[in-house]
Length: 517
Image (cartoon, rainbow, N blue to C red; front, side, top):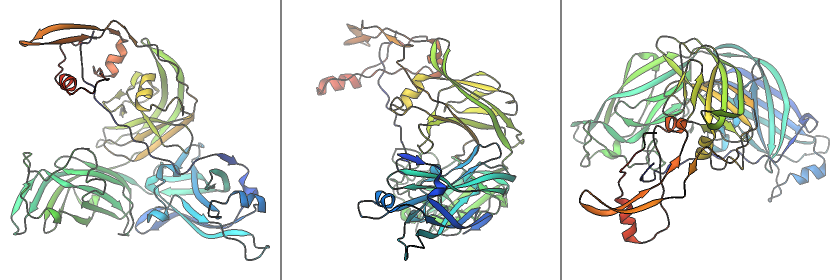
């Protein structure tokens, strides 16, 4: 039995995908003629290593088909993007994970090319586009180091959502250069006032941005973090990439990882509100992670001493991915996900993390699934729900996920049920995906019956700490596994009053009895 606990509110953010998908047209080659293409599988663009694609296409739409594709302004727009699949026919790159990276946003990486379809100068020529460019950084693929035979495909989508897949395909061998994971951790932060006097700092209002490439006008960002002592910025880069580290106030309210106001503070947490040079606490430096174990960044307003942890990314493979959509574990309804990792970890990399997510369609944003429990195999889940794979994580691993986790993290899951599940391997404290495996599996969620709440809610007058008040008792039943996965957290939400005195009463409520289970 639980007496009372005030509700804690969680926020879930969704990233819109690039356009709606209304229809898929195949075979697309009847409508498209890619009559000129140049693919460089080992290119460097503005200091970033990756795959460069330059092509021209002619279109075989009939006049009625062409007219049906026009927008309200009477124009036809086609958006081109590429896909890569490895030797096991597994996706090694998904452009929809990088929908921001396109020419209209002034990025060096170009995952989408939006083009106006030009009318022909003469009927024999046909409608066409020329010089269409795509550029895929190696760090945006999950290809391992070394030679990788892949299938490269071009695809197109209209503004109204019709997709044309495989308008052109080609077998390639991509020589992926060595990739490194890096963690930068501030160990000493010093700021200087206008007179040059130094002040030790523990936190800046500004944030770190790891920027790949040499083009300072490009808006590519690989990673971001707050500038705090002992808070790490993690990222992945390919050997030979140009890297820059920028410190500035974020355009998103100056916040990267927190929704709390950030101030310039000393190492002991005191505000440095009287510091007279705060506006100058910005800077940009070239970064060479292989230069040593420490790096110092300095200008007239600040000095940052960072600890560098750099390690070569090992070869990682996933196999045997399967999803059982209807499983009961310890009286709890849910699903299980099984996979077999093949990882050889170096001493400086004690573990990697496997993350589960799903998509309602291939082009939908990923929705993370958390709160799982390893029920077989050598692995463990952490507080974020990721599955830690260490050196002993060999053989098949099965993780159970209660259905309520899906419902809590994604309230729209019943309207847009999962169709594709992904297991992605990431480095510790690093956003980059270094290996992944996907499987198509429908999942429909019915009404949950694991949890039951008795209608007998008891309200009594009482005296507590010499103060008159009320106690509210709410009997309920919950399987034991819920307590393990929820880490003992239970929440009660009370609604229905606008009275100021009642609201003050709610704010002063105190939990008196917590159940053992």
